[in-house]
Length: 76
View (tube, rainbow, N blue to C red):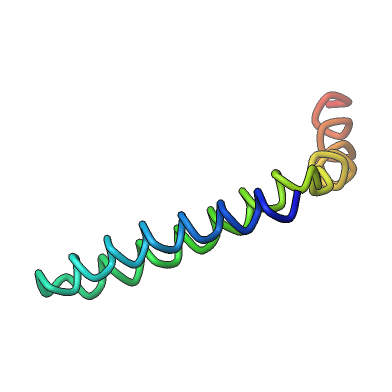
């Protein structure tokens, strides 16, 4: 399992660094920064999914927040 995650991260980092360097070579600094941030988040989420870790869902807190509003609107 750790080998898969390490391999995934290494390949992802190599591809990301190559793409960021090509963007920087073309004087596209903002695009390189955005691409780097998106890839960092993607690699983190991908490695957590490879480890079979599922983040908690945000549906229940939102449901508890909006349910009284819905009941209020339906009561009228």
